[in-house]
Image (cartoon, chains in turn brown, green):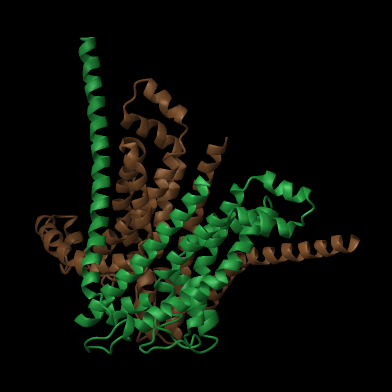
Length: 312
Length: 286
């Protein structure tokens, strides 16, 4: 009997340590990622220092590297994506939680979730082959005609109208992150206690007022968390962007001008890079990881806080 | 006068309500329309490219006619398969730790937090990481490195779903097993894990779906291979990278194959997602 107990205790001990080791793997991977990226990027950081971040140059032949062009491209395309995707996602979430007939809710919700699973390369191909030509003919040309000559904003619509560029990448990204954001928003909207909602209706509020003044304030943090989750995805997205951003290592001067994002620079140049160029690409990767990590961590904290509020 | 004012206020509120709700419907319609449009384009281009050669011939040389995607399909299956073999035990055991052992501890909290971030971390950076540890050190691109990169994406998915599913198992079940004198590892593997089986399978399916469409982490790890190869120690063809390369090329035949491959991947991913849902629903009704 004693030996059985002893054996079981030993087995338990090993099982405990085994599972613990595996769960710690995630933390080890995280530190490994940060350390290895930084280590491989070190030659570049040593040469350019912090200046690397705002140095507007990406000259492979003379080995002059700065991240500014890629950072601007990344932030501009992700920012445009958010401007488009957030209102749309909000509308979709409101529709799914308030106006949609109950029998349709589940199938529409599922189709939104399924669309979030479509690989991003599909969005990229769609952008390149279908969206870009239409975008060039029916949006870029008219926009340039109407707005291109205007003072102050005119420069935003200058440049070639071939369908590629920062704005096109932003629009494609918007539709890629739309399902993610909409799904999170719907989930947090559903967290609102029915009693709050019903009290507001009882006071005679319209549906819109319930959404604006009860549901939205109650779920504020979760909504912002969902938006930042989408932002994190948009910043780090490679494939949907690479196909349509134009891949030019120049500072973009207008919404139509081709640019590059951190992820698409990596995807395009890594295969043909050598020593110092590779280090520069690692430095870009390091910056991207740090930026998305901060954004995603903030998103996570905000979503957690809403979920905690639900528990009370 | 007052009734007039009330009437005006009431009308304004009704108008705002109608506007808001109509806009939300427009948003839903627009979102669905674009997304359906993407699927339609994919289906029409993909079906046109789909033929038997796609599964029996290898990727063609630049500019040549014919050919298929056999090497890429096999490569993708092998890499995804291996990374499932790796990430399943790791993810499930780690998930068990988070629920059964480290429930409230600070490390478990931190692990959970980091796992959630890794779920959405840019996959291209994971590719860079694997390049640094498994390609640069060895000196060549390999299918193993590709699998490793995919596993890094799959493990957090498996881990978090396993944990969430184990949490749904009522603690009375655990207590009953403990009362019978079962050791902890037996309770975890043979009672709770078994009770949460369908949920865990859901997680696995979602993980497979997630990694089968990933392109970015394979670019610098598995690279690509124009020829048929089952040697995972060498660069390996895989659908996503082939699609990327072919779609960006100027050759019509390559672009046609890219659409075919894109359709294959999307169908696989959607079927896996639907299967995952079916499994999960069975659990709920059981």
